[in-house]
Length: 289
Length: 215
Image (cartoon, rainbow over all chains, first blue to last red; front, top):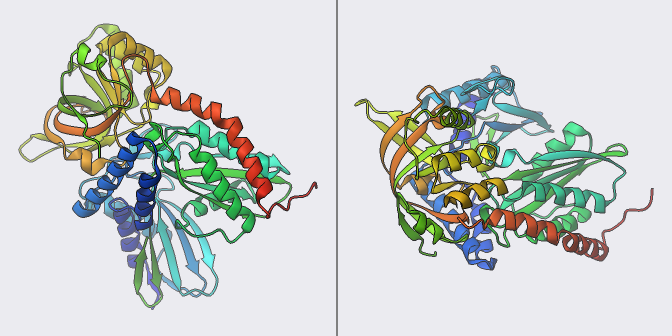
């Protein structure tokens, strides 16, 4: 049995819908942990209100944030997957279905960057990137909607044969520029190496890595730990009103490249929206955070 | 959780001046909200032309909250949800608006810059930081929509006056005396940066994984 257009259409819409109403369980656990270690009383209170807000959204089935962002999907196609019907169109139609039926309705966030007109659809929307998983018999889809609040502060710069010190300095400069703006505590994704486009892609993949997992590359595992400590020493704190909790985690990916080394840095706000599914050739659908 | 100070709108200049950066508050009464840059352009156009705004905000509040307002079958407007939006993108408009409307309360998330803080000190106005991602909790405070103005604008850009009960908690991010948690936060981070970089250097040296050679 193939993976059908209908299934891709309904599952992609469902993932976006669910990502808006529940924050990942492990993100809740990090907020709780930060609340316990936070020394600033206002920050501690903000962290408690964040958890209360996420719990209220989950129990009422309501939006965590009014800004649903735009739909962004990462799709990994197993090399043994068989499709029936169009794939790209399934995401476009799934989004249109959701816009037409979702309650409460979505605000118009899809923006034409040339005219600044906004609506519920537009060129290249949803934003979908495709990759391949060798030998798998499923398609893995992750929806991670993106809005201005944290999306605005991502940055990329290209260096020549940089030292780790230069790379870390750049990451700190991006963090300080973002300051209080991205609804901290944030997850920070970093991509080092590859090419201009590839560094951004692996930074985004890094941000989606579940919390508490150790980076398999020892150099990066160390870098993640010291950078997380460094970001939290800035003192911006929850919602940027001061405190010890600015980052929930720093996740870093790398790729080999030439002597020019792009460093891409991106942020997910504290609600850390994401929802994934695997659709198997058998038609079975597994959803996870 | 800390109990917020309960404030009834409209606020007097004296009660605004009694608030300090870092205080937690909760609002009851009528607020005016918008999330649109075109709305700010239009407010300034009206102020410069001396035209009355469709909602009188003089001495009142203008909050950067985005929300879904809709008309029911009975023709009555309601707001299904609201949540703060990034205020800093309105930095260039707010000094003139704060002074022109003699605002007591503004807010959203992410704060406003030093020029806005100076305008707020002049008029006696506070900036309130609402929880980004607080849609469900904040929307619980909605009671009634009084006015929806400028329906030609995008839904969340419209100027909307709503009555709320217990909207919050919000943190006073900038008080009426020029104290800004955002200004302090930026200065603190810059001041700490040299010692943060030094610590990173020490941690790098301590990590056995440091394998880079001079290439």
